[in-house]
Image (cartoon, rainbow over all chains, first blue to last red; front, top):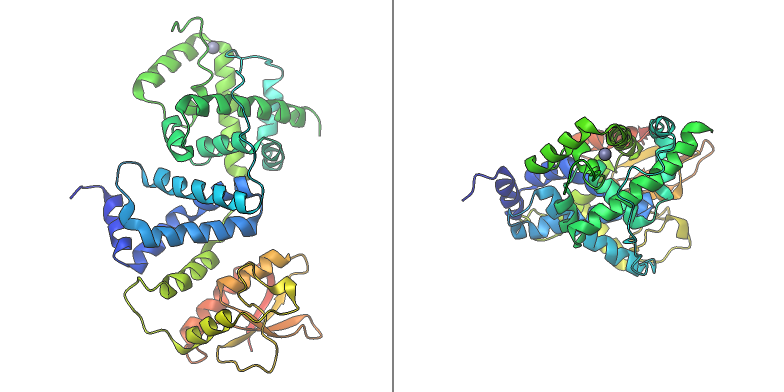
Length: 186
Length: 194
Ligand SMILES: [Zn+2]
C-alpha cells in the first residue's frame, strides 16, 4: 500500500521472515536494551526485557500501523513492559510528581565550563544519571540517546508534551549541578 | 511569546537533538543569536548529549539474537521447521524443570543451564573457562544465549565442559557458536572444542 519501507519490513516479519526479524533486531536491539537498562538498572533484567519485546514484535508486527516512527512504536511497547516488570518486582513507584515548575531562565549559571568538562567523562555522566529520579533519567535518555522529539517522547510515555519538557528541564538542571561538581573537583 | 524576554529553555534540548519543527527551530535560533546565556546552555546540552550517548553500554548483541532466534523457532508462528532432535530434548528438559540445588545457575524462568554429569547428552560439547571477574548474571546470559548447559567442571584449570544446543555433526554451526563465544571476551577467556 504505502511506500513506507518500514511497513514492508514489519509486514515481512509478520509473515514469519526470520531474516527480516534479524535485521530488525540488529537495528533496534541496542535502543531497546539501553532504554530498558535506564529503568531497570540490571543488565540481566534489561536483556530479558529486550528479548520479550522482540518476541512481541515477532508476534505482533502486523499491529504496526505506520502512524508513528518504528522507533517510537517499539519504545512504546518496551515502556509498557518495563512498567509491568517494575510492578512485578515491587518497584513501581508512586507517581512521582516532577511538575513543580522549573524556572524558565538560565538560572544558577554557575560554572557551565566545569559542567561541560564533567559531561566529557562518561563514567561521571553515568553516575549523575543514576542519581536522577527514574522518570527524569528516562526523558533524558529518550531525547539524547534515542533522539526522539518531545511529541514522540510523550507518545512513548503516554503523557502530555508539556510534561516531557518540564521533566527534561528538571533533568538537565540536576545533571548540570552534578556534572559541575564533577568537572570542578574529582 | 516575546523572544527577547523568554528564554526557550524547554526547547533547547530538542534543538540540540535536532527534532524541533521548522517553526520552533527558527524561533529558537533567532533567540540564540541574541542571547549569550542560552548559547552557553545549548553548548552544555550538546556536551551532555554526547556524554549520555557515551555512557550507554552495549546490549547483548549476537548472543541476544541467538537467544531470540531459538524462541522464534519454538514460537510456532514461524513457517514450520522440523525441530531438530536436540531442540526437542532441550524443550523436554525445560518442561521437566528439575529444580537443582545449584540455584546460582538457575535462570528465573526455571530453564536449566546446569545438567549434572552422567545425564544423557546429544549436543556438541566445548571446553570453556570463565573470566574470574565474570558475574553469575553474565555467565547465565551467555549460557542461555547459546543454549549451553554445564555438563562437567570446573576442572583443575577452571575449565568447564559446556554442552551446546548444536548437533555435533553440524561443524559449521558449531564453529559459528564457538566464534560467538570467543567474542564474549568479557566473560570467557578460553573456548575450545572438547
Ligand atoms: Zn536566552
